[in-house]
Each structure stands twice: as structure tokens, then as C-alpha cells.
Length: 233
Image (cartoon, rainbow, N blue to C red):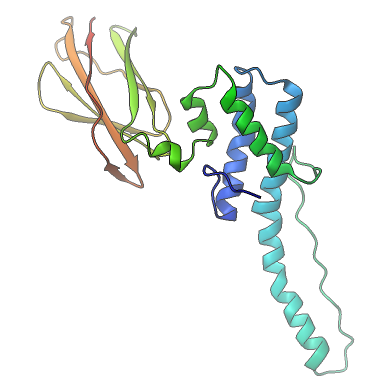
């Protein structure tokens, strides 16, 4: 089976990817032209695969040494007691998971391809669902974001909608009224809300924003272009 570039290589990471896919597919599919039947079937496939990769296989591997010990005892052991062979008991299925027909992961990959062809599909959906591969991410050297002014409690606030692609998050900086750049925050889920009070109460101010990628505790990559907005009382 050809591995998709967005799909992790390690079993533990694959199980985590499948859980995320199962948890978020219904929310995204509701926006797209994908039937509830197809969505439910794909979620069931993901839950089954996540159980096998994340629970069943680790349990089986933990059990395996006992089979080797039993074989050694049968073949070369000592004593007068009859050997009792170990029996593997599979872990219970989690709620919502059930055995599926063969080819569950192949069907999930087909669903992902269908999602990406939907006219309503966006890169933000793909990033959230984990279906944006490294080849796609390499075409994005910096995050993408927009800044929108909204009315908040007492004064306006700024909503920063960003695309982190396959990175862990974004490092956000801001400067006000032409001052020095200041660290604003790290965010791993869009959007980020800048709800700070105005520097001078009652006086509009210019805010400029820039971002770069953030991974494993370290900001990296180039800065985005600067987005400017005016925030008023």
C-alpha cells in the first residue's frame, strides 16, 4: 500500500493521527458535500485502525516475550509440573470502535482524496484534519494569516486567523503606534484573539502583526509580511 505523505511513519503517531481524524472529520464533512453515511463509515474505519495500531499491537508485543519463555520451557525446561501455555487476551475495544472489513486505511486515504477535491475544502481544514503532507508544507515557507478588527467588551479586539500548515504552531509579535516589536503569544490552534486594552484609553492605535513558525519550543523560519489594523475604542 502506498503511504500518503501526510500519514506518519510510526505506529504510535499513526494511531494519534487516526484519533484526530475520527474526532474532527464530522465537523469538517458537515461543511463539505460529503454524506453522513460516508462520514460515519470513515470515522468507524479510523477508530478501528486506531485501536489496532495504538492498543492491540502494543499489547500483542508486550505479550510476545511470554510466548518465547513458554517455548523455552516446553523445549528445554526442567521440573515435574505440566506446562500451561500463556493465552493472549486482546484489550477491550473503546466505545464507538468495532471491527471493520479489510482495507480500512485504504478507504480513509480515498476519503481524504475526496475531501481535497471538494469545492469548499480549505487549507485550514486540511491542517486541522492532518491531511496536509510535507510536500505541500514545503511550498509554504512562512505562516499565512489575516487580521480582522471586531467589537469587543469596552473596545475593539483583533482576530488573527492563521494557517500553520504542518508546523506545531505560530510565534506572534506585535508593535503598536510604531513602537518596538513585542512578543504577543504562541498559538497552536487558530484563531488567536488580541484582546489587550488600548495604550491610551479612548484613543485609537495602529497595531502591526507578524508571525513565524513555532516547533518544539523554538520559533523558526522567516517572518511573514506585516499586517496592519487600526483598533478603536
